[in-house]
Image 1 (spheres, rainbow, N blue to C red):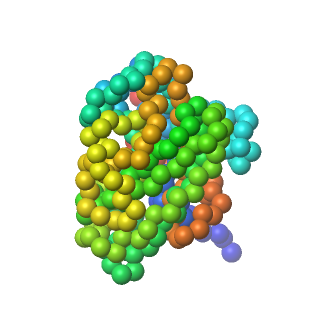
Image 2: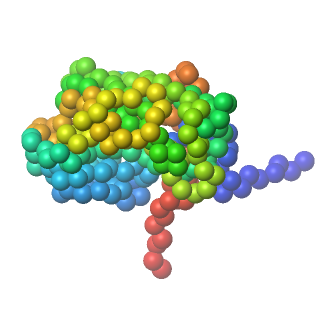
Length: 268
């Protein structure tokens, strides 16, 4: 009996039963190149799907870093997204900020049932490294409902890969996530922030978004010295209250998922 063939175009985020809601969490795919220097603004650079937003807070280099040792490497990760400060800004203005994020397409998140009594809790896990120890803040944000909840994590040892596991509560309130190809959910990892986004308090439950509540607990500014860097890999966002082993995908599958959002067309 002949074996049926699987259409590779059907391997998309969520539709194939994949547990990781994130695309390219192992930072393997970098269609735009492996390094970009002189960055002072916002954009997608190096590792696909990952966006770094900078608002007048120093100059930076972004790299798809190759790992050859350390805890993350020992856990099976050979690539990371890395930010290096090359021109410092030790006194950011009130509206200045740097954050790292991936926007997840709304129609891939309908099973979260946000805005209903059956809404699902999430678990976020990742490996992170920086020379800057201290408290970092993450704002989880749903654009359609205009709601947020925050998490914090601490880098305890400089220049050491540390694994973090964070719980994100279910959002049973709000209007939920629309079933379309717009933004559904994102987690904003703050690397530096001015006073405007620190004037409120850190929300531990879902509530209406407020700019002052974006990163009140952030103590670190990676833009304050050219010695500073921050790197991340093994990023997994999954349904449930327990972090499971990272879902390693083949390079081909990750590339295909990335090409929905960015594809290089070779000239003849």
